[in-house]
Length: 384
Image (tube, rainbow, N blue to C red; front, side, top):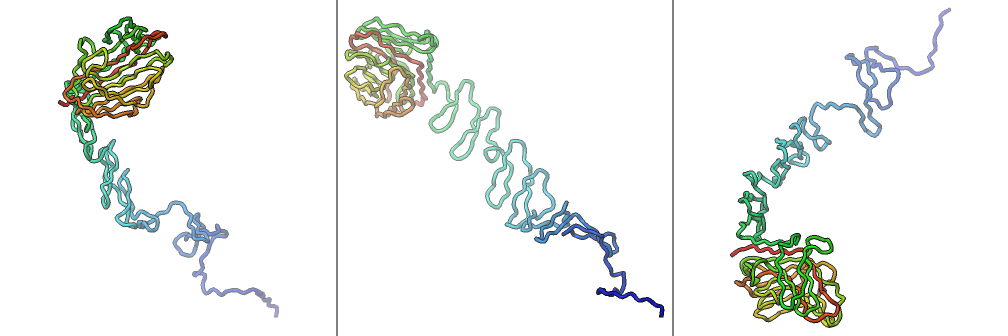
């Protein structure tokens, strides 16, 4: 009949109308999310956002029109106070909260307890207790408190409870670093021949050399200046007293006939010997006896002497400290800041002076005995 027919060998679908077809690009990105191109609803295009087979969404900027709840990784809110701290909500999934105030310079974020947002407050908690220039913050019984500026010349110290400004008349302080000979008060007692104290030892300023000769009773002592009897207004029972000196004895190389004494501490009424009363360290050197320091309480010319177990370390400086409590009922002895003995005493109402004494007690075939004093310091907080 002269008519040609095309034979289709593949399956095909019949389309009622081309208006229902959705047309896409020739190629696309694997797992890319298709986007409509235009408003016809019939054309789609490729995109840069992907959704993997594991349901992982990868995209650029995400613009969410509603707040993302906390349980879905959001904050539950769409805005916050500028520069403010963000805190958790009132429940485990509640919207996050923004602290209303950003505080001021030097304030710290402070907890106000459970159920209440923290706030910025002055360092130390709450508002500062200081009100006036020069105020000091000290710790009270349970909170920080204000210590008002003290009067001119009043030092800061402890009253054994608080940090306070002390009245100069309520504080006795003596310190001599022995950098000037004029600051030394010394006495040459029976026997004579001792070498005068010097504040220069082998070119070292600030160290006093006490040297006795081989003569019996050759003695040097350092005591308070210009007081013939040796008494000083250290009133026992009128406040804690602290005596401290840094001291070095001669190297222990003498013979069995050597015998000299060293006495460091507080005594009542004598510069040559211990007097009738005193609290002091004592070292009586003799090769036949102990080379240790002894803690001594002397009352009515009777000694209570206790071996500290610490040797008078010849050639090495030792810090010797005695602390008498405010009621003069106890004396604590320290060597190099370690407590070596505590003695019960009964000296309330007694007046003592300070003393450092070196004395030759027997003939010596070797020669001089040298002792060295680096400094002497005495403090008393007067409470009477």
